[in-house]
Image 1: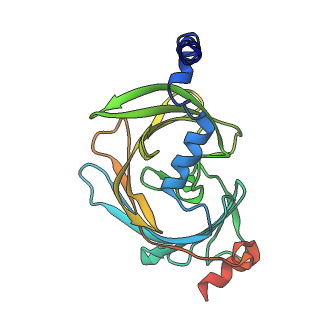
Image 2 (image 1 turned 135 degrees about the vertical axis):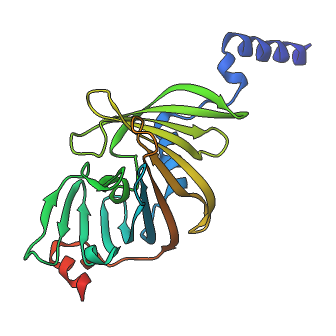
Length: 249
């Protein structure tokens, strides 16, 4: 009799509080953080980046970079090619971004939103994580090709981040990002992004190719490819304005 009563109360609780019958959904902040962990190591690392920009009826343009990232707020981007741009170096500290040009005596302040090449903004390379720049909200869930996804709405928490808002599709089972849409403050869609070609980088599967597409101009897109990702400690001295010109040595 006692066992029957216990069983009755358990069933009653499940009917009164249906959320007890399934695992609680993670918070939007946790989903975004785990998605960032898939895209990038959360430790110091270096990575080789190639960007190829395509436009209709034009030959593609490409550029390569050696990128050093320390924590979440320090990045150095050294231009390797094309030869005319070799020696250009960008430094990000928090959300402040500078560029050093060999022909100038000191670094210039620039914006994360400025175009680097094609459809790729400076911030697309310099800011490796969405966490910290955006306040996330679970807008809905959606099924695509038989897989379930969280659709996160990301609202910029400062004026100087790369995009004013975004939508991000994250797979429920493993937190792999599938695609994103990026918007201006006016609500105009600036570009879409798909996260592709998952392969092992720095000890886990990560998207090694990002395809950024202009939503208006047909045939215009840019592909970001990541390779040789190496997690290792990086010295603080590299992430200073005074050191930028030394990368030319």
